[in-house]
Image 1 (tube, one colour):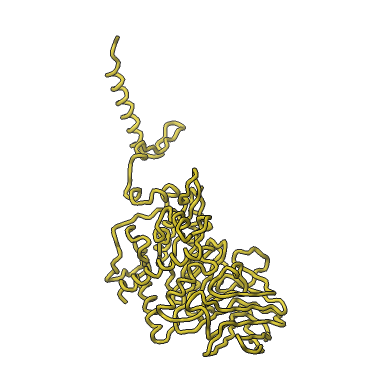
Image 2: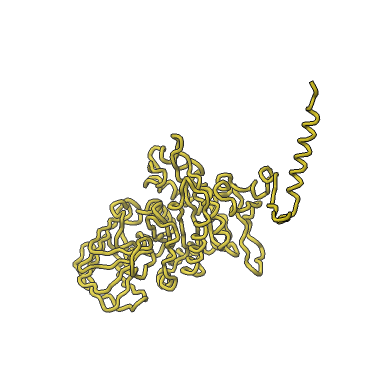
Length: 468
């Protein structure tokens, strides 16, 4: 029998050579009425430096926006460029272990820690923490606030709402209320009123009431010596207030004017562990919340909104939020969102990147010149083939949030890797005591304490490292 092997091999080599030559033809070359498309037969095996650096799980979701991770760039630059350009992303070996500082002069942490040191001179430091259901009910923030107040002073929970979906769930304070209509950044409605600092506005009916009472679960939340009420009133409005053990007292809220923030202040050096406010005839009054504090010291104001993906924060009006900041004087703004955007079928997150891009720019307008810390989405688990695994969208969103923080000149903390990376929610949910719920999405109170200690350790480590 005649042997065709040599001829077959030769024909194969000629065919491959011909196909490879097509890859070198210029794009758009025309023959008669036909136009050749761009071809690259080696595209699937060619590996770029960007591909090698990207997280495989994130690249699978959407490789078009994945950052290139260069060598470690943790050292603060000796000289600053004349024109600010985004700093490169930090080395992945530090993910979850350090706060990545992408501010123009890498001075964001310096400014915050300098503010903390000023508490020794009688200054009050405040942190505005925008989040979703991951931190609602003061889970995580309650323990974090208490730990920081134990280090640097302050008593009380800071900002409190008029109403709450999780009032019975909190361990920081008891919260009772009646007679309020609630408006928020995630509630669709016609004629939405001007929204307050926490993304809510509260409209009282006649005899509407709110009652706050300190609890002793935490060391520093049982009492406070100052109550500040934020409101807008088109005319003088009567109110009745009462502290623990005292008789009801009458007061009048002054006219603030449309779009102008008003505030009413109560102080008592002896302090109190309970305070109630009632509005007999509120008229057109709008209330935005109150603060329970005993300065000086440090306070974390929890602005959690269930279902908040970050985009709804654009409903806040910068000129109005700046009026709150003129009173509160925040030293750090934190945004921790993404939980509501994570799915296991995520293929493209360009839409969410665009949404957070606008949100980060909007927050910079609301708090001009203030350091902003982006805390990434944490781990979220799902069941696949009988096993609990990390949703494939999580590492993609974390990488995207890091890149946006870099582009906007913000601070960034990788909560996902800080928690332990892939599978951490499953491990927390199977810990004794249980640190995460069996939805593999939310922490328990004990889990909040666990993660808050992680934050405290990172802050103390950074404070010792950063030269200011």
